[in-house]
Length: 391
Ligand code: PHB
Image (tube, rainbow, N blue to C red; front, side):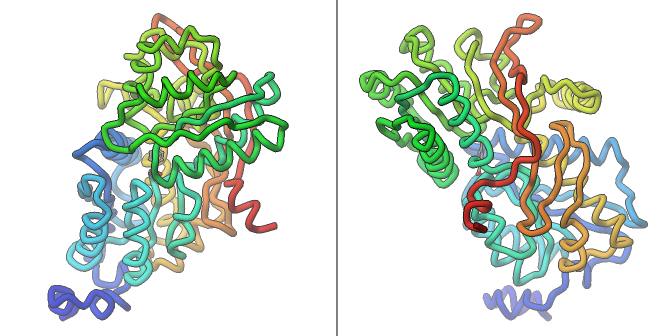
């Protein structure tokens, strides 16, 4: 009956009160992940799909007496698609959990998760505000602020005084730029200009030229997963790798998905990031080897959001004895901590956001390929924008 109302177009009536697990088949818990499998951000979807499947392959598809069924839906990075797919997953597939991807899609899915009462793991989005859009959102990815403030402090400490920012023009880029500038300025530095590069099919050349003309000592760059390779090529083509300008950024510009094909362009680049495939723990070595074997390419910082997202779902189910009621599940997730391939992580019980180490890394050639080699660790970093708001 509710399905009929949904088709008739009354979303609020149709899914309000439809408890996530309530109508699901007794022994199956479906996890519906909405990610871009096609379009400009297809790499992101590919990594999340690969990592969530790897987790299930390694840990089995049975937990707390339930069989886990993973459903991947392609939103092609279009927020309206994400919203529609989330509705369908709740109403038709009766998922017990949702997985959310890119920031704009995660934003548009939030009211659906709230009304449908479905616990949702944010596996990709790096924008602070996303977790505030639904009480059922819990993040396993990262925030840009977590990394941008730390790299600004590092740059100041290492002699940077005048910076130019090159930022992908959407919410995560705005946050990266805002937190970088706040910390850089507080440390006595000056951001000469923040250059905004279109998100889709970017041509970095004119922005890199403008940045060079401004004669900064430091270039701070955020481009999202999937764009580091193009950025590195254009950076080297314009000779910026030999210009003496220090290139720093969030982990996104030293994406392990791109590093193997960037040659020498990014050698020496320092980033503050949440994950490197070179992270020297036993768990990570096993993760990188298993991911490589299954997919033929390196695990990257996006993949761990999916892998840890599945872990969070499995552990929550164990704690609730297989219950998927969103209030019970989210309560179980709050404060949970575990070792990820990236290092120790936890879910902040107050904000439902991820708390994790941020590493300072330098791109170096190891065994003939570029890797991001960690050399300093900031422990248990929270999202700085939420920290500031709480004061
Ligand atoms: C996001 O959707 O917020 C996002 C995606 C990819 C990134 C960073 C942020 O590399």
